Length: 166
Image 1 (cartoon, helix red, strand yellow):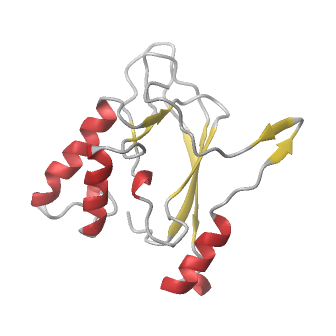
Image 2 (spheres, rainbow, N blue to C red):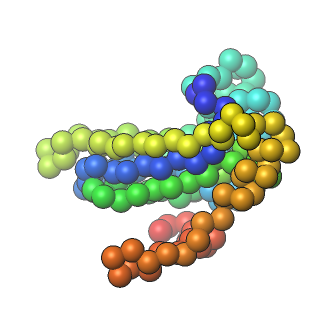
C-alpha cells in the first residue's frame, strides 16, 4: 500500500458495531494453516497488499486469504467503541510479519448502527534505521512490549491468541 517501512499499526475503534453487523478487523493468517502459507507465498513473490496484485497467477492465494477470513479461520477483532488493536507488521528480524495480513469485514446494514469508524496510526521505521541490519536492530529492540499498569488496570502482552472461535 505504498508504505514499505511500516513497523506497527494501531487501530482505535470509534464506534461499536453490534452483532450481526460484523465490521471486524480480520487476520486470516494469524493461525497456522493454508491461509498463513498463502500469505507467506504472496510475500515471497513481493506482494505486500492484495489490492496491488498485478500477477494473476497469485489470485488463488488472495482467494485463500479471503476464504480464511470469511470462514473465521484466523482471528477477528470486533469493533467496540474505545477498543485499541495494536499489531506489528515486522518480525523481530525486520522481515515482514506474514501473520499481519488483515482486512475489514463488511459492515452489514443494521438500523441500530451508524457504521464503523476507526482511527489508524502507523509507525514506520525511521529513515536513519533503514537497511537490513539497522532495521533488524530497530525491530528487535521495539517488538517486545513491557507490562504496565494504567488507571489501576494491569496490561500485558500474551502470545496465546486463544481458540479459533474466540
